Amino acid sequence: MAFNSNFDVDAVMGVLGKIGEQFEDGALEDEALRIATVALLYVRENGKLEDYREYFRKFFIPATESVVVARSFATPEDADAWLAQGLGQEGDLIRVAGKGFRIIPRRKGGGLMFLRTPLPEEMGP
Image (cartoon, rainbow, N blue to C red):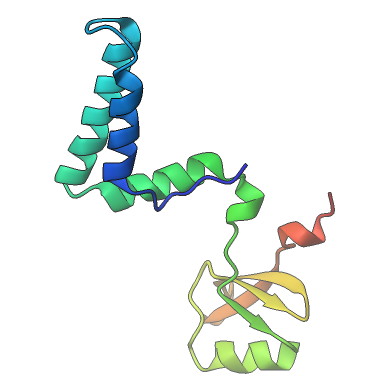
């Protein structure tokens, strides 16, 4: 099941309010819905909504689906040229000819290099 981390806060609070109307004031369900609504309002009013959206996304998306490939290259030569230009950043995950690589610091001599790091789709089911 897919979850929308870009949900409309006002729409969610409206739905929670409608559900809450089904319960008596003070009922456990009513209290839980009020707490959830006020928590969401608090997050938004304190400028933390984007942080919450990221947390929400990570919470519901399996780790293998949240892997982000920074760049893709058709050949190793293309990837090497890109890295030599200083465009890669340590920690970036890239795809070269369908295979994953992480950019890491070179042990000797400074600079960056590629470390073979299989992508989720390479791992099989």
